[in-house]
Length: 193
Image (cartoon, rainbow, N blue to C red; front, top):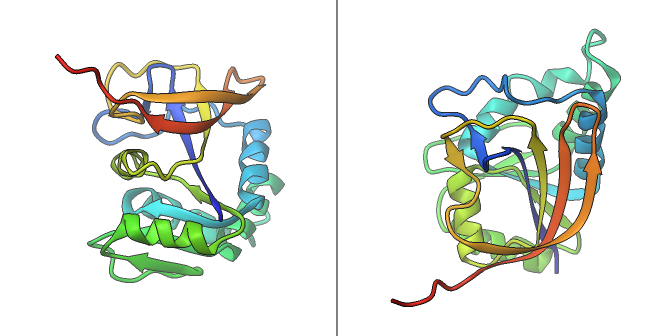
């Protein structure tokens, strides 16, 4: 059975995006951090996306491979992005390219099926609502979180309910970003009144 890993950039106060149109200016992604993204992506059998995150990816990564003006680490990620199979969970996206399949209905059942049929890692890049649904269904095996040295004060939270995590690894980058790997994330039942 495959493992489902949620990988997200997150602020110190737990948000994956700022309110409104987030320009990502709070993210501190340099070559060192990006190479860590590449390592994680290279080990995955498949990428899973919500529509919004997928639509952020498509204007950039398909062309990154052939663009000699882009850094090598970005061209490497572009190659991984194009080559890896992708599933986008969306009720509004009608078509997708670059080795991508759209699933409009029964998203959680499809993730369960993919986990059963896979022997490797399924890497989910979000978004927040989708991650919350996966947590609630107890489908998440691991989190690969990149915590950036910024507090947003509000925005889209990564966690929408209490979850207990076990720290598996910590990596510190020169930009102040921390890569935190957690396993065995399971919702904790709230105590009654």
